[in-house]
Length: 375
Image: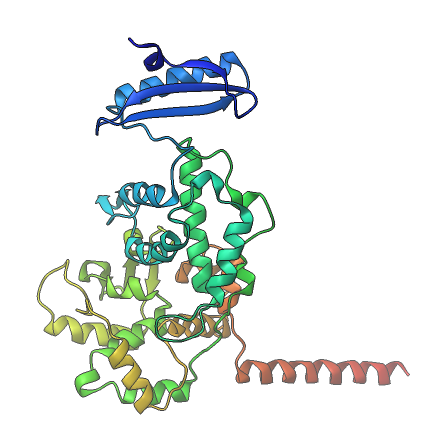
């Protein structure tokens, strides 16, 4: 075997320290060289064995982390991670459910960092990208949100961690400065639906928008997420006991949970069942496409402003708390894992605010009475 195929440890003229070096021919016939700095000859020998073993096992397709560009890393990450999920029973064995959204977030990252070598990307480079993205309008001409930029930053952090685990990167630049991702700065929606608005909204869910009525009642009475509702199957619904079982494969937190149905929700689902095909794996609401347009039209006709389907989850959680349910039990029903996230949904409406003030009035009046009795 040629000397360079075995590799060797030595010094370089242009850089200090010891270097382990391996030369090989890749699958395209091109001559490749891998050089990595080592602390000692012992470490170098161990590294050479590892590199040669990888070359042998992978058909000389070993990747040189020192020369790797972010574009190349993004391609590898896409092949390994950004694929449709594959399940074995209820266990996900590969891929991810959010792979399409991740591919969208990856595009601007590749456009910006694609030609840069992964090891040359610094904390300052990522901070600069964050500032530039915040100043860039969306393709619709709207201001870009910090939430959207945070998603992109979270993705590049995950990609760089992947490179670190694979041995192509020594340190993730995210850990070499102040935090670049601040969820506290994200705009938190606190929109909840009043009972009057709900009545108007359900009233217009008729005719071409009749399919929205049972869906909205389900969202308002269970606090289920949009994806959980759309993926709900008849096998998940027990109309006799009034129970919905949310499969873990449809949840954000990857944990199954059980939700009770209100009387009106049971009635809506029973009507759907009467016209639904007798297929346990069939979708309860029969919706596979986007409902944004019909939902937007319904809100417009009902004069319900600035309301999104996900706000039904805010509304449901707030109503459960107002009904006197213990917060920890509500978290079990809604599927929240973090108390900080859950508290975002415990919104205060006008009625709650007035009730709080009334309670304080009673407190102050009692305190005054006691004070007068003491005097």
